[in-house]
Length: 194
Image (cartoon, rainbow, N blue to C red; front, side, top):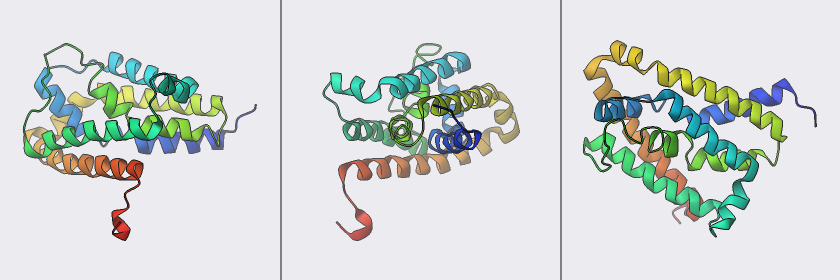
């Protein structure tokens, strides 16, 4: 099936908004402060692998474990909620060993390849062809890698106080995203008081 550049751009923008790597910079800097290093290549590769898995075999993969998309999204929202709490309260809920597992948890998953981006990948398949999504996803992962490589530059520009302020602000945003993801997948609608 042929693909159009306008479709690739549309899918790119949707994934860019959902992955939100630029919005995750404060958390990435905080993680780097705790562990000492962000392995940009490994983080990007693992996140890309998870997203590709969901692009090509998302729903069947979850069905193997008897898990539906909503349950997966709720689980992801809980992890994001605790990550947000860490940022806002300045506490440590997740224990990290320096230089180990930094490519898997929590940067690659669930921050980059989180419940939101994984469910979005599956949803996009209903409207766009596989190769359009593949190209848009690949372009997003290139951008993710560039941002992860530039964290030292961001750290120098912002300084310690700037990072602390951004950390608190984006922690609250992360909490809000987690709550929205939880509510939308449990069917609770607080806007109408139900």
